[in-house]
Length: 394
Ligand code: PMP
Image (cartoon, rainbow, N blue to C red):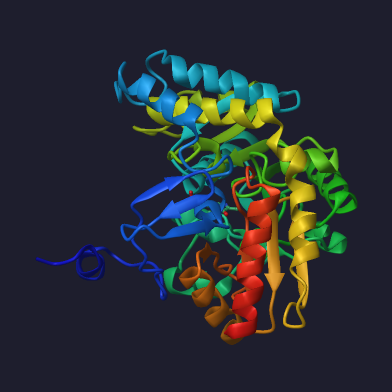
């Protein structure tokens, strides 16, 4: 009989050049456990997903309660389903006016697809603007606005009319013109290796979009849901976008995403004769119930409020000549090393010693640190000890 590792290699389609090859048996809080009983500190939260920790008891309870009622009953948007409508209301309450209309989908990529289609439909304009080094997803539309040529080149032709600008560079905003349907931008760039652009840039971006009649879509799929020190990262820049997209941390470990806008913008999606976006499983009731519980945990415990202080502790402890720089916005952090060749053996040794981290899609010499927001001071100390020991020994 083949072992699970052998089955993984023989039958599971692979996406990674360097799969971790560690089997997970259980996960709880900030920890993962292997069948051999090894305990691993999860410093990356399934890439920005387990913001409130693995299997948070309130999320597990919400899932169980919903499973006892119904699973899928009808394509999205036909029946009135309590988990969906309660979640839509709770999400609306986190957003500034006039953003109060929520389209629930299955993933980040699907949320981006929906947002791009909505912007084209609302404005009637053909073009899109996004940033170099951005990551917006793997489906064709989301890939088209992703800003990494290497990631895209084998899949052309992609969407026409997409132009890329440099994140944080105000003069580039002139590219946004009367033919631009939307600008899509990560409020904090994730896969570029955690890059922030600051308030002045986002203010100028907002103004340019308004002048040109383009919608501003903020991709908060990685930086939203408490990751950066506020519930949404854009709250730090004092701007109101036209559309927000979310996923990842939104489901507390369950698959769900959303594109969110005003009723005025969103209603064009259902204008006859052409429907705008259809999704069978979007806002699955079990995922929606989990998401509502997740949102409540983050809000009640104000988990985002401690993110910056916890990041400061990481920064204080992680001092070593090999570490060139640590960038962060809340608990979305990148520890910059000189090269992948230096970082990779450190990561391998960390995992061996019980700390999980990785690198970024478009920056493979930076270590990703994005633990559950619930991580405490002692656990941060333990994780940093292991990282420093691995740097020394690798
Ligand atoms: N946008 C950003 C900023 C992301 O980080 C990701 C996922 N890494 C996506 C979009 C795509 O999300 P998904 O993998 O759920 O399709």
